[in-house]
Image 1: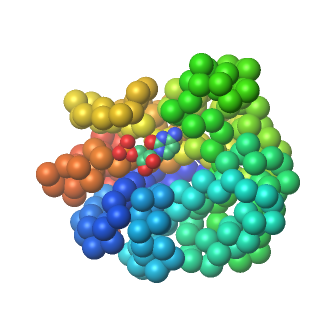
Image 2: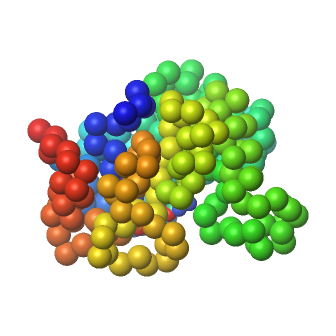
Length: 239
Ligand code: C5P
């Protein structure tokens, strides 16, 4: 276990524009997960007030902001995200080193404990698509390049696919946070995710945080689904 591992590594992705539904699911699963994630869908529908409501639940909140702009603009937005009480947020590593450094500096000036992560290469982009945007290296090479850039800029970690964990552990060492979506418990619907791992496999492979959405939020009983995942990971429910 690395020092950066959370007691319960599961962050449930509250991918809905409906604030009440998000709060209902979050309250139902809060004893069986380690954190909550809100992304574009929730953020654009509910804004900063919505984030404050989710933060009030009392679990760490990952705002999946994926900022990518000039350093000054990203720094200003990062400061505002930190003010909302998010425990983690992210930016695109391809925004460059100055943008990464400014984002982390601005957020940490508000909350020194905030975790600042970067997205390397979106998992929806394969080598053929990368060619069309002038990126002539294999995706895996670009993932390592951007993860090292992220680490060199002093950020806490990256969001990556479960299949990149081994590569990134080797490139960035044990203390770099790896946040992993594309998790599917055995037997659950894969949906639009392509290369998935089970929670136990990804945890064993070295993921620090497992981002899990539909297997929990789309279940008939989200609490039961979250509890089953916690059991698979051999975690005690939080009091
Ligand atoms: O429902 P599901 O478990 O597929 O949700 C995964 C979550 O992780 C979604 O919020 C999605 O936006 C996010 N994500 C992802 N793949 C990435 C980055 C983020 O699935 N490469």
